[in-house]
Length: 299
Length: 299
Image 1 (cartoon, one colour):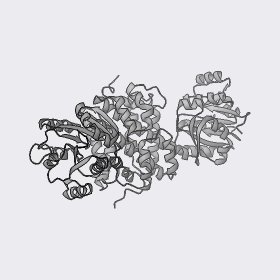
Image 2 (cartoon, chains in turn cyan, brown):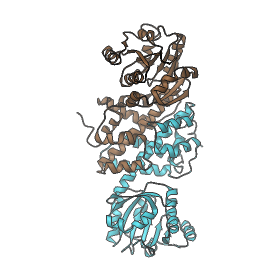
Image 3 (cartoon, chains in turn blue, cyan):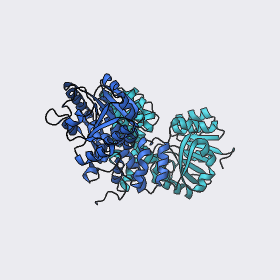
Image 4 (spheres, one colour):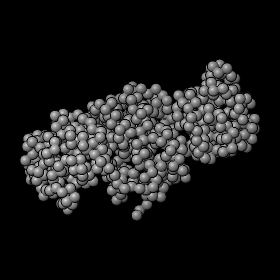
């Protein structure tokens, strides 16, 4: 599987899913069919890629060997893999589903069971990167599931990513991803506090960020989000709403383990607050709107 | 000033102050006199360096051209620069005091005024590094005060540091330092949560840290503290108690500006909790003792 004749379907055509589809076509794969709950969007992407816009989920399975899914949340995952009504599971025998949404780890385990019961296979493909990397095939991609399934679809995974990791059984890649994003969200909300207070004190933020970068305050999010926080450039690569969701997944795992994580709670509360004030669609750097003096005023 | 004949005194012989003294002597400066409130410690360091252990603060000023102070907190700073009783201010005319403690920015402003009234000068020399760097003369050193004072003592500052920055007026370097440590403490407490939850989930922490390092979760503290958190190696380079103090300084600045910083509050609460359970002397990596499963049990 995953040779020159392999037909790939893509379900969920948000900015990640649509750009994965664009990249795969560009890299020589046959993107045979796409689907989105917003049928206009599906039609538009299908026109662009010269493929079919399936009217049903069963139509995606019928028209593909491998189906890549990138949906919004647990509920959407359970809907596309539902045991009754229109579902990807219809005719799933022999198909491999690569599920790239950031969802609760247990849902990956449940979906794996459903796919196998239908004669198919599933693999979680958790992405720790953003839109540009999806478009360019340079995703950081962590996979969980059976090793044989991973090996079977490795050519397509290799096309999608430059950093491909087999993490372990189904659900474990999602756990790692949840931890990555939990820590990233903490660092992001913390950076926003440091820069916001620096601005309030009248310090030169360029100097401050330079000092941060050379000291114990350095972080990846300083590189990616620091200037955006200062410039209020919150064009969305990873939304505040997603940040809140991912921290929530991690906090739920912590709760199951009886661990209390105050920083994760505080950062989730900040991203929740952004959603409450109607700014959940901003990039995660938008958390600086809550910490810079004078920014957090009613519109 | 600060040539081959310059006599340097050092007040406060904790691990930073004593190692600065050792380095300066090794680098060819005349360390003429040392002082610590613990007179045994002062005697021991004086014996090692072959210099005088002053019995009084006034004795330090009398025996030095430049006095480097590295004391614990605001109260200690105001004690060594007191306007009555034994004080560095006695005979301070012509002397330069380089004050390296991490203290409230306003105290630097106040001390500058006191030194100038006594005919001397002061400069804040805020360090964003630790013991090894003090010993090796590779401190990250941010200075605040009058440019002419900075220029006058630059040779000794150059000896102490490899990254020397003139930040601005008195107090501003301390503000930057407070922000650096506030953000560092947030990132540290957040990392401890990520690794603690990873351990609780049974994930391989080596793999998890590798993934963190390659993604949005990367940070300087991951490099410096990640493995120590896993190994419970909390030998103190920067104590939890200092972390709590520095975050407190930043939160006080925020309060003055009317800013609410939930992540800084949550991280300070974690380091305060370490102090409460008698672990304030651990390195800041010790915050992981609160987040790894099974570690936070009564002794």
